[in-house]
Amino acid sequence: TLTPLFPATTTRHASLGLAWLAGNKTYEAGIERAFPHEQTNNNLDPRVNPFGPGARVTHEQWTLSLGVSWALD
Image (cartoon, rainbow, N blue to C red; front, side):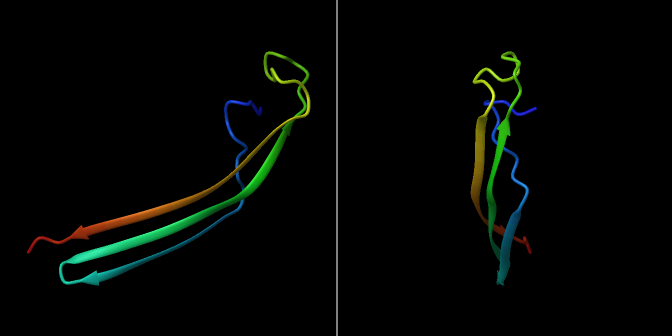
């Protein structure tokens, strides 16, 4: 069931990450792309679909992640 409270669920993703070691520290970076996806709710029941049949929801997203960790000697 698709409702206007939740975005469409993306189905295609791509990600890239890398890490490098410098002394006792590790630096990490990652990026993820959730490609655009659209879903349409054609349910006639106003309790399930308050905006009526044909309500569309789209979703896409970029996520960036950065991190640093270190080892104690």
